[in-house]
Structures are given as structure tokens and as C-alpha cells.
Image (cartoon, rainbow, N blue to C red; front, side):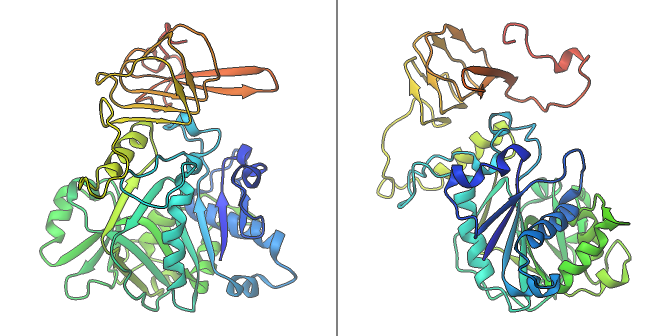
Length: 397
């Protein structure tokens, strides 16, 4: 199976050197700079870029049918997770699970994601060669996978409550045919979800889609405009054109057969924001509390503290909750609070006081210089530059 990754532009040329992954099995590119393609257009761009480099004289249709491919979207600016914007969220270091065996100290989000996707792809019907997934989530299946039916599109979902489902896409099916998609909804209200339950089921989309070659060709056709590509969304446009009663009328897409499957024993962890790298990591660590299963018994002052690949000379207490220190030297002159994320700090003898919610990332520039990137724990990095609410605190700057 070939893995196709859409990455931040600065990571593309050094991805294989950083990870050690084979260029024959891992293809990398980035969306064109300054052009928003969406998840549908981005998938088309990724496939076409890989075909141009590895087509080996085949027609596109021959190439598409010749191998299985995992398309993983991990590009973007990572505005809500600035600590890992330079390398992309997909290489975010993830602490070993205290209850798991066989993990690596150097593991990252990508290395945790891919095994499940490979397992699903290995069980896919012969007409399905393409899987599209998101790069900022970690999905676990704690039970064996069910057989995957023959269809043009197969989507996986989770049984989640309306308070979570309202912020995501949902797959709606009649209660007497739960595996057949009626329609897809984007961020339905809690009221709408409640009304559905009278005679329908809904599964929350987790961003794991299998496509037949026919479905891929139609997705690519809808992503084109003239001689180029346009912004086309896999979920709100392509997805809402699927099912027996789709909300978007498009005869060709409406004719695609679609199956929806609940992921057995499925768990979904998002790593898209500064808050989520802590909350999701904490949730995973706490999945097992049976002391007989836990191999790492060292006690931390507070569970929501994660220190990796770092030297810490300052005192860390229970008051320093929601603390993430990675690839950094935090000397005795540092004073920490809570909701602090510290990444990339070189060895130093500085006297630094981080107040609650203050975070810092340091990036090397050239051979001897560094760029200091201060930000707030909850910053969204949007809005006017002239708005006082978007300013970095003067003390931190």
C-alpha cells in the first residue's frame, strides 16, 4: 500500500530524512501555496501529483487500479497548534501509553494512526483502492473489524451523543436499514438529532472514507474547474451528494452506492489544538486504571503533565496542571504556572516567568539564530491585528 501525505510546504523535502520512511512507500507533497483546495480538491491534487511522479507509463485509470493508497491530509497552517506548525501536526510526539506494551519513546501521531488504516485497507473489497483520512486525529478500534461490504463509498462512524455530534458531520440511516446511507448532515442541531431518533440512526463521521475507483474519478471531476482545480469539500459537498435522499442533487454522485459502518469499539481523539494535545493525551493515558496493567508507576504531581525529550531543572508541582514540555531545556531560573506549553527551547541559563496560559516555541533560524514564538494557550490566531484582544501580552513579547 502506498501512503500519500499532504504536508506543510517546509516539511515536504525533509520528511523522509526526519522519519526514515521509504520514498517508495511514502509520497509527500503540499497544496499549492496560496490556493485553498479543500479536502476534495486536495485529494485530487495529491493523487495527480503522485501519478505524475510514479505513473510508470500507465494511464491514470490503470495506475489507480494497480495499488491501494492511503491519502492522509496533514497540511494547513496549524494555527491552533503553533508548537507543531513547523513540522505539521502529524509529527506531534505522543507520550507512550502507560498501559501499552511495544511502543516507542520516539513515537508520533503518524506512527500511531497508520496501523488501523492499513488494517482496514487490507480488508477492503477488490474494487476499493483509495482511503482518505485526516491527519490530526488518533482513532482506536478495540474490537475486531467487521466485514466491509461492496460499495462505491464506505464511511466509518462512531455512536456519539448529540452534544458531540452537533459539531461534526453525521451519517443518517433509516433504523430498518442502518448500514445504508440516507443522507449526510453537517453540524446538525441537537433538536434535529433528537427528531431523527424517532425512526433513524445517526453515526458521527470520524473522517475515514473508502472510495471505489469510480467514486475517485467522480470526486476528481467535481474538483476541477476549467484547466485547474477548485475548492471542493469531501464532506459538505461530495458527502452531502451521497445517499438515497441526498441534500445536493447530482445525478452521478447520487447514483453511487454507499455503506456506513460503526467502528467496533471505536475511540476518537483529536489533536488539532493546543488544548487537545493535553486533553486527548490525558484521556488515552487514563483508559486503563488497573494497576496490574500499568507499567509506568512513577507519580506525577498532576496527571495533566507531560514532559518528553526534555531537561527540567525547575520545580514542577500540582499547581502546574496542563503542562507540556517537549524538546526543551527548562532551567532552574524558569517559573511555571498552568496551561503552559514549552517546545524547542535550547539549553539556557535564562530567568523566565510564564504566567497562566503563556506558551513559547523556539525555532532555529540558520546556523546560529533562533526565532522566539510566544502565544497564548487558547489563541485561535484569527481576527484583526489591530484588535487588542488578539495582541500577545507585552510581558511575553
